[in-house]
Length: 548
View (cartoon, rainbow, N blue to C red):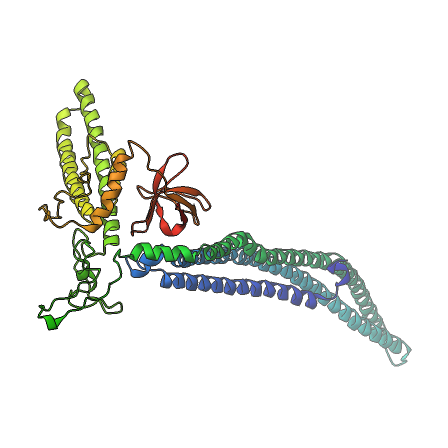
């Protein structure tokens, strides 16, 4: 079935149908464009939303990212930002593959339809012109035959009239013959025009118009097929990015499962643990005995922590420490003396690590410059050894400066009661380039004159209780080369611990260790593996069972 055969007389219907089809394509293109605008606006709003809730650099919120619940929220924001990118990709692909492609194809269809309809109109006009000629010939034949009939009747009447002359009769007969001859010519012309019209009409209805209608049918079917492909692309465009969108949503779910409330609590403890002991009971001041009024010292006053813990906590030794009192912001010092003992040790240790890394870079550069100088001296054509002197001198100055800073911060760390991990540090830096200052403790645990941050000696007669704690560790650590310390118990890991810091040891959940040294109040326990490896682990990460 085709339009040329079955719809040969439905030109107006075909015209309206093809026009309606083109309008549908335009409508679908407009629909997809509006969909892409929605996707773009949605993606833009998502990006603005993630940007709004992303912490600024150096802000308090960024510092909170060490906690898993804060970090997971940042991961969700990142995933939503990627999700917005996929929505933008959907809009871009729909615009390119559907809107632009269909718009271009629509213009081609309009031109093709216009051409076919123009051909149909030309064929119709040609047929109408032929029909007008036929009608004119027919009317002329009718008129001439009527005139010939009248002329024949007049000649017969004249011939029967006795009063008519012979000349009148001859004239009437000639006139009738002439009219009859003209009528016969008109008849023949009419017959020829009729034959011509019938032939052209047959071609019009059986050849020209069916061919045009079939072309219009083919055009419309191609339009429908192309539109159907656009419908499929509307779905496939989104399906194409669904795996990536699924990964984004999986990332959001993974961010939720990565939250570990226990680790967050431990991280908060490690970050803000001061190392102070709780205030003790106030002493009774007996004014009846005439004793001078004196401030009651709490256990904080005798804790022997650097920079005076009472200044850090209570500000005034004559007043008790109030837990919820508003504290003024302390003055930041280079030796981190404004921080509590535990936090001070961590900051000093971090500073030492940074200086050690920087010093190692300078050492590597110095060795490289030395080797290059040797090569230049042996092969002068490769370069002038004297040209390296400024760099070598600058590197030497940097190394000297870093060594001075290293000694200064290590003395402060010694003062703060650092555990003796100096021997581990010696293994990582070269002995010929690093001159770490060892802890100077004697055998009975008393200290020599420790260095203060400004390089002056402190009083000899005031031993620090925190230093005494770590003196025991240093003695044990130095005696470790002679014999291993007997374990005092066992512990089982309750959580995983990476052991990334120097002096620590990594552990997996369920792993069993021998306890070599108990926690001395700083949150770390010294343990040993079965293979002899030793290190420190967080006390809160293990379940400890000591031998009786």
